[in-house]
Length: 55
Ligand SMILES: [Zn+2]
Picture 1 (cartoon, rainbow, N blue to C red):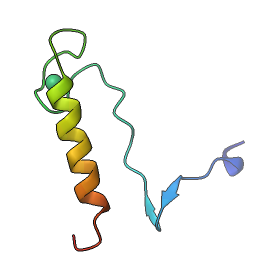
Picture 2: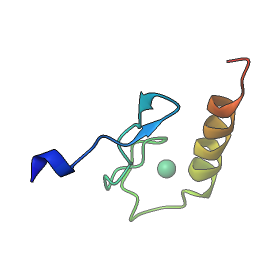
Picture 3: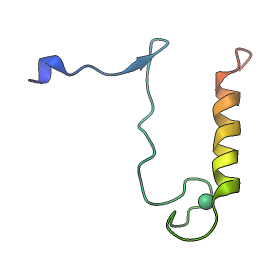
């Protein structure tokens, strides 16, 4: 069974694990509480920067 499982690769490098934790990685607070709109926008901005070729 394990032979069928492959590491998802993006441009040759393994993908970072998805953020499925209940804590917000931007403000380190529970995602169930408070407004995390800014946090998600920060996260998006980081994702865009990571995608830039001159980085
Ligand atoms: Zn947050």
